Length: 368
Image 1 (tube, helix red, strand yellow):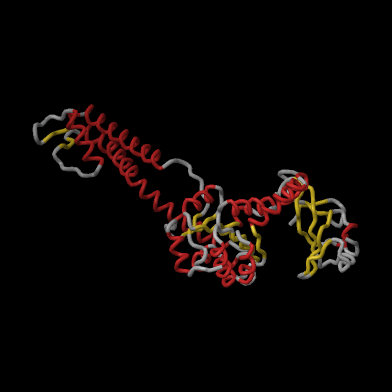
Image 2 (cartoon, rainbow, N blue to C red):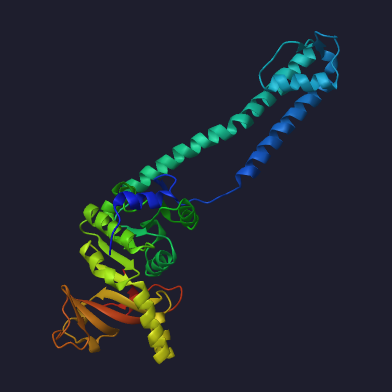
């Protein structure tokens, strides 16, 4: 596979890239145009109330041009007064008019100014709040999962890890398309806009503190570069990547991926199995769909299971992980289970419930 240079990859991503920044999840309370319309309506109401007050007490005002104050003069006076312009051509001359200016017009002027500058103040406040949230998020984020790509593969991977008990605030999504990150933020995820082949973008996702990295990009060459960059920044993370072509899987493993899933081949095998046995295909699809029906779960061996064979456990054990060796349930090398082993079991999980495992006392409790 011929890999393009980093510069070429960056140029491709820049077609959709606006800027490298982190977007925290947020809820849209009200549309901006509706907020502006409300503010303008409030300002208009304050202006009309001021005009009415001045017009009703027009005999207490003096006009330097003709001496009398009509409705247009009242509107003019209210406008220049609320905007704090104050030309001085129309002024209150009676005690009652001056008292009304003190008790009514001045508070209305203050309210009018607050409404006008409210948008600016709100923007400044929101920026300060967002910066504070971002700093707090960075300082508290540990052992999280970074997902590169929020397409079909990325979404499916996220749904699976969430069904396994991972919370949304422990997932950070990286994608070069700002609209995709906006959609992710609307769903409650933290998103980073940028090209994940660049180390500065992955650093914004705090990849150096991540526990897992899921690479679900659209192109295999991009996946290779992301794996290289991610492994360089985090030597201990578990990196799992998806590729389209099976011939690119070895290259991705050499780039630092711990596990590589060939999406096209996996789908083809599931199709073939479903043709030979539709029921077997349904069972396989159920196994890979976490959170309902049959689930594959990896868990540590508990004390009550030590010294037993895989067949003697309460759960249906299909494989045993001993050190770096993955052994089938019927492999003679297993002998009996050890406390340091981990087992991969098939459990029945009802929708909306957490996966469970047996305890030494007998009852079951949620998986950690």
